[in-house]
Length: 104
Image (cartoon, rainbow, N blue to C red; front, side, top):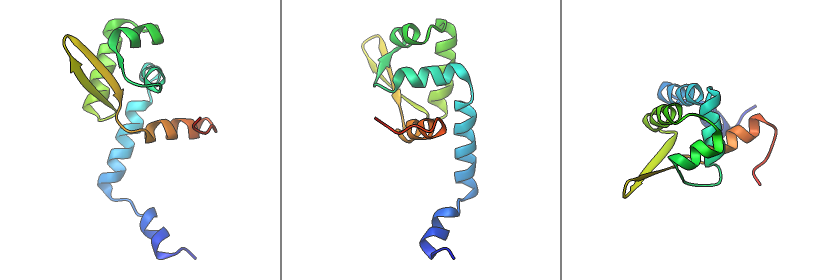
């Protein structure tokens, strides 16, 4: 039998379920996952992300915007440059768990 604490952890609100489903939708596209892989080591500018992923600039810009709007990434401006980073490190943990890997 589950403890009360375990039962409370298992109960997610509808809002939490919507949030989780939306993040999985965002992460379900290959080019977005390549961007995540590029950003695992830390913050990068668009040109570095393009270089790391091999994706076209227009596609990277489109995907970055979508990921920003959905709370997957953060962006900071410095002069004319924009630097992107992963908003929640739990995303990396989930991705590694899906591959049966642990964080280094």
